[in-house]
Length: 446
Image: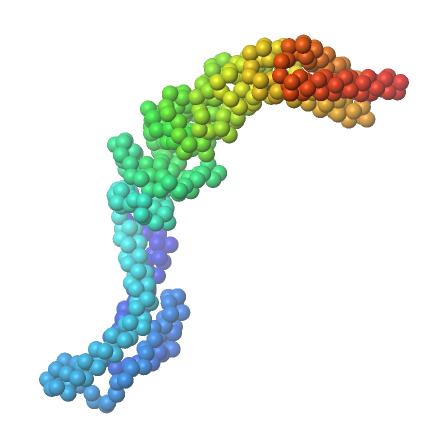
C-alpha cells in the first residue's frame, strides 16, 4: 500500500516520538544519577514533553563503583544494590505521570502506523467491532472518534456499515443527545451512529446505503433522521419515493418524544404529497394522533395553511370543529379567522360545532386582520391614493362579513364572558368602519 508524502511525514514523526521515549527510558534506567542535559531539553522541546527530573536521593557516588550484577557477590554490594533500586524507584515515582503519557503517545503512534497499513474495509470492520464493545459507560468522545475513523475510511466502509445495519441489532450508548443543523450531537445507539457515518461519507455509495436502510424501516427516530439526511438529494426520483413511503409508514407507528427535534423534514414530505387532498389527509392524521410533539403539531397546522386555498380551508375547518383535540382546534380556528374571503364562509359552521374555547378564539381575532389591512391602506395612501382605495374596498367587504358573524352570534351566545368578548369585537368593527370611511373621504377629496 503506497503512502503519500503526508503519511510518510506522519510516520517519520511517530518514529522520532518513539526515539524520544526510548531516550527517556534510558535516562531513567542509568545506574547513577544524571543531571538534565541540554540535549534532554532539546528532546523535550521537540516532542512537546516535560524533561524528566531526577530527584536527589541519599546515595553516595564513588568512582569505580561496581555494577548491580557485581554487587550481589557481597553483603556490602547487596546493600548498594538495594540503595540503587530505591533510587530508581523514587525516580519512577516522581515521573510516573509523564512516563504514562509517553507510553500513551507511543501507543497512539503505533496504532496510527498499523491503521495506515490496513485496507479501509479492515479498518471499518474492526472499528464496528470496537463500537459494539462500547456502552452507556463509554466516553462520548471515544465513540465520536471511532465514528470519525469510519468516515475517514470512506466509501470502502459503506459495505461493512450496511452489513451491520441489515442485521437489525443495536447497542445503546446514551440518552443525552441533540440535533444541531441537521446533525446528531451525541449518539443514542450504534445504529444511529452508523447512519450518521453514512450521511457524512455521502456520495453515491453513502446515499444509496441510506436509501436502502430507509426502505422498510419501522423505527420512528431512524425514519426521521434518514429523511432529514436525504434532504440534500430530495430531487432524485428514488429518494423521493423512499422518503414518501417512509413518511406515510411513520404515521402508522407509535411516535416518541425522541424524534421531535428532527420531524420537520418528515412533515415537509407529507405536505408535498399529490394531489393536495392527500397531503391534507396525511397532515391531519399526524395532527390528530401525535400527542407528544406539541410544537411540531403547530408546525403541521401551518403547513396545512400553505396548501391551495380550498384544501387548506376545508382541512382547517375540520380541525376547528373537532372537540377532541384541544388546543389544536384553537390553533386551526385562529388560522381560519386570520384568513379572509372564502375562509369567512366556514366560520359560522365552526361557531356552531366548535368548543367554547374555539369560539373565544374567533371573537378575539375577529378584527385583527381588518386592523392590519387598514394600516396597510393608510401606508399606501401616502404613495398612491388609487391603491389605497382598492384596499379600502376589500376592507369594507371584510368588515361587513365579520359584522354579520358578530350580529348573528350576539343572539346565540349563551356564555356571558363570550358575549362580552363578542360585543367588544363588534364595537371595534364599528370604529374601524368609521376610520375606513374617513380615509376614503380624504382620498376622494385629494
